[in-house]
Image (cartoon, rainbow, N blue to C red; front, side):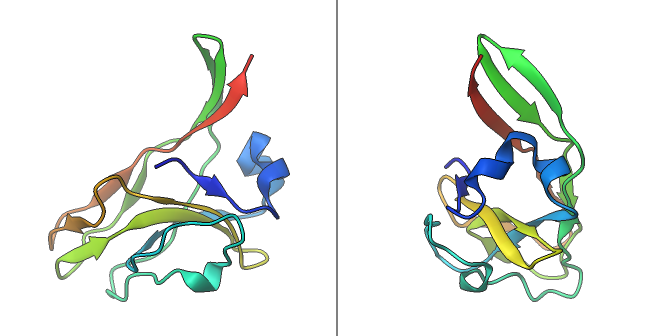
Length: 129
C-alpha cells in the first residue's frame, strides 16, 4: 500500500525533508488501516528495547517515464531481540509530534525474526511531469 498522507500534511509532501524539521520513520505493530484523519496516537510502535524511530534523510527527485518521484536513502531498523510482527510504517514530524502519513504493508503483518534488521526503501511519487 502507498503512503496515505493525513489531510493536515498533504500539501507539504512535495519536499518532505525541507518542510519538516525532523521527519522520522516509525513501524507500527497494531492492525490499523491508515486513514486521512489519523493521528499519531492511533499507531502502536514496537516495545522491543532495540527499536527506535529512524531519521528520514534527504532524497533525490528523479523523472521516471514522465513521473516525478522522490527517492530516499534506505532506512534500516536495528535487529530486535525477539520476533516482531509489524503491520506497516509511517512518518511523524517529531518537532510537533504529528503524523505525516502511514502505510500498511502488503500481506501484513510481516514478521521480523529476532536478530534480523528491517530495511525500508521509501519512494514518494509526486506526480506527472
